[in-house]
Length: 300
Image (tube, rainbow, N blue to C red; front, side, top):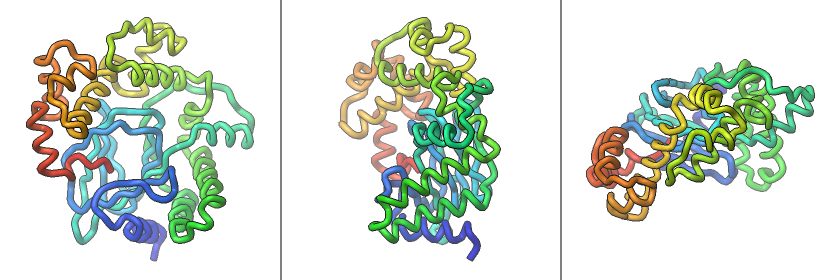
């Protein structure tokens, strides 16, 4: 059995049910999907994503990233993304893993490796892809094997996760990845703006307010925010508002007008138009579709 097949076999064993979910290891999530899916909207946090079998596509703004077993995908900021499984079948399901990144672990490793804490290059897209090498694949397999030995996990899981962070920092995207860990990098200035918008998404804001929070000029914030997220701060706020409204409608069964008000819309008609534009149907029809086909709303 080759190493990718071994990883797929482990995911197959520990993700026996359709969909995605957590494991006994707090940062590790596994997914099984038996058919290609509709586009799925989600707020993706920083993570390493590996498709051991099948293919998946992730969309950020107008950027499209397709990944499969020969590569891995890194997400380095909280992003409203659209994901869909492109290749899967009951006989050969999509099998994937996601390991949430730990910025503190990255910062500690940078200090241990070379002490270079200079901000470095200007930030690029918060989604990057690279070839999956043997060392990273081997560490991922050993991490999943800890699910067989829960008594070892509390001691060994942090060590293997640290190794995975180390392998990423030694890879071709090392310079970009360092941006996550360095407090004075342009990337983390943008990340401060992202965090502020997430906390204040339901109220209007002036770009000057967000720029002050990020400790950047408005023009610099706009330039670097778009480089990282593929959207402007206002577009980012709109995506967060609409995704939260969808969650309220589905999880708490609130009506569309109430959801619109709770996420900061003054005009129900504007809310309905923008909701339909993003999700492809008005709020109540979209909710009915999701309830009829729960797998359409599964994040993977």
